[in-house]
Image (tube, rainbow, N blue to C red; front, side, top):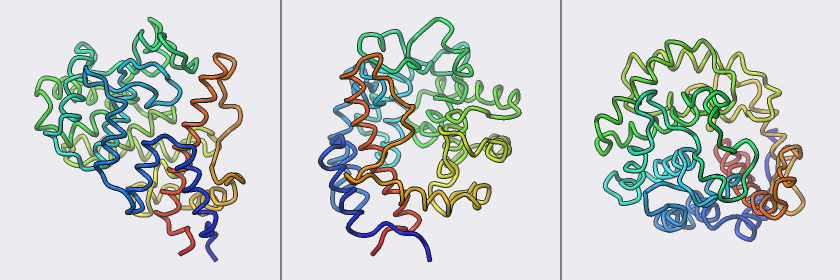
Length: 305
């Protein structure tokens, strides 16, 4: 018999998100459950958007700066795509305008963060430096591949020269990449591979790279999950992690905390940088992780009806 989350524990998790999560995560969960509107999610998301069109303000919880960054833009676009937001919506227009200005035209990538992240507390891995690109695989996949995934949806609203520059850079990088070893590079590549309207040749090359990389990736990597490759049973890469899904679902159900929420590896902690900022980020992460865990269990039919 499939291991399922009881209705009482499901209700406890929903209550945890409502009581402890960000308004954004609470609105997303209500919308997923048919209890809230897409408009309410938009209101919550817009709170993270700057006048320049970019996103900041802790949309990526480990980065508390209000400054617009490409990693926050990738998250914002992910949510706009999830809501099927039309290209003419001012939030989409602003995000694309910011991305057009932030693109590195020489390399065709979006640098993941900017100097201004230092204006507020942040996790050490988000510290800006001159050699940041070397530490993030040149930004070729994280965040550029995911940003492109969403811009394919909004191609008609994206300046042609921006799209051409980023796509040319991606094609070159694909030709030079045999394997994606980093978990976050792989996650971004998966999101691009799952995007609609990819050119056939690019889709074929990218799919082959993603499949090789998923097959080779260490299943013990704390930064990865089989649900990255198979967010739902119908995901195109589900066959590569089929044997890992059932144990992972059981672990999700069994790892719920008494308070109704979920957490993660306790080694993920940057309280030594700023105790209060980490406490805020930790709270935000738990709300997001709890929402995402519930969405996964629902997608796999593992919540008691």
